Amino acid sequence: MNDRLKETGRQIRTYRLALGLSLQEFAAKIHKSKASVSKYENGLISIDLATFYEIAGVLCVSPAKLMAAPTFSENGAEPGSRAIQQYLYSYARKGSKITKSVLDHYTGAEGNVDVTFFYDVPAFDQLEKCRGLYEGSMSKEGPILNYQFVNRRNSTEHTFLCCMESLDNNGHSMGLLSSISYTTMTPNAIKVVLSDTQLAETEELRELLLFNKEDIQRLKRDNMLTVERQ
Image (cartoon, rainbow, N blue to C red; front, side):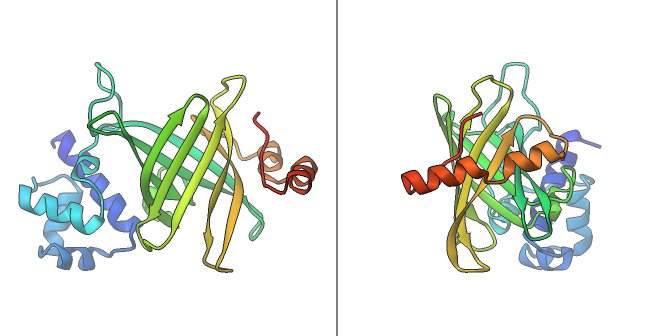
């Protein structure tokens, strides 16, 4: 089996399920049979160019991302390749659980960084089961990381992530994730940790994700919500 076909099929399946589309619904949208779509997703048959672009359009994703290689090439990240994967952690009071999310970074044609944000996944190998799928971009100025996203299931929701790289270069960044809560229909911001590696879901991580006394004191003093750089 061609490895590129297999990887492309895996990407198609991940995006389809993340958007909540059944095999039947997706097949109808691209005017193919369920059997053909299943073969595409399992890398058993090649996809003609017209169908490939139609698939990308239905999934609201660039064709390059569907073909993206999961690692660096020997000469660095090529345009369209999946350069890195990062892990985002937040804490949900409702359910009292640490929420795990994944950010896939892709190298654009002019060195830009496109990012797919899989929000709230049950496990890092189950991106297709995310609660929210977002597409956006990242810019970096010194230690500051800025992300902008649009919800692919509801384009009226725009989400922003701002992080500061750690002082000791430990691969962890503290930040704020802000958006509109569709539960209360109000703007909100949550404290997050962005990591280059997967972290153990410990009490220490939970405490790091909670707004503490110092955070509240700064809020009262400065009338703005901030998090300390670690």
